[in-house]
Structures are given as C-alpha cells and as structure tokens.
Image (tube, rainbow, N blue to C red; front, side):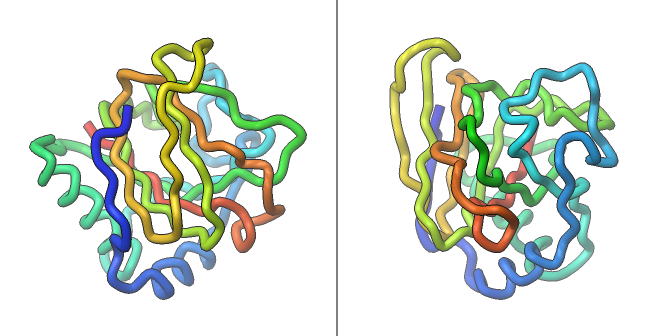
Length: 178
C-alpha cells in the first residue's frame, strides 16, 4: 500500500544516476547474496546490485534522504538495506508480490520500502489487496519520484518490459527498512 510519494526528491539526480549506472548489476542467478529458497517476482528479468553501504557520495545521500522522508511520515527506521535495481525486457511481466524478504543473505525482512525512481521513462507501480485480486491503486512514477510502501497490499512495477540494461530500463534505488 502506498503511504507517501513525493516528486523532485533528490537535489542532484544526474550525479546519483551516474553513480548508479557505474555499479555492477547481477541477475537473480548470479547475485552474490541470493537465497535459493525464495519465490521471486521476476527471476529472469530482475537485475540488481549487491547491497549498498556507501560512506559518501550521491547514493549515500539518497539512502539517507529516503530514510529521512520515511521517518518524517512517523515511521521509525531501525535497520535498512539498499540496492539499485531494474527489470530488463522480458516476455513476462513481473509478478504481483509482497516484499516479505529481500531474497538475499543476510535475510532481511522489511516492513517498508522506499523507492527512488532514477529512470527518465515513466512507469507504473500497481497495488493489490491480495496477490490474485484486481488492481486497487496505480501510481505513475516519473524521474526523481519517491514512493514509500508498506506491505499490507501486494504490488508490482508494471510494465517492466522495456529496456535491455541499466541505461534504458526502469532503474531505481530501493531501500528496504524495518
């Protein structure tokens, strides 16, 4: 369920995007932190970095900003883990899912996720009451939008069927928090 969203979030998006594009991205099979026992929303289309723990730079500033925006909504953030990720072109769209776990080691079970959309192409995130039900709400993400979610409702990024790599796909910074 969408809790909050904000446009024009990060003050230096070009520098943040440049840092994100310079990272190494892994598919689900080759990710260095992957767990094998989790059902993934889109195992063949997912591309993501290893967990991000920068000590400086635009990515650190963006992670701190996501946490600050979350806490400004009255949600205490005790722990977090962040990844840059995107979904490449695929014959199937990402499945409707709940982020009950990041799917990586060490196991992290978020209560909230903040997404900062880094892609110049607009995209939609859909929310569902249940994974098999009809769409309850859609939010269009434009470049530099922030959206905060909890896990009362299932969700998916749609369509995630454009692009072939991090430069032309739905690149985002996802900060999982509890």
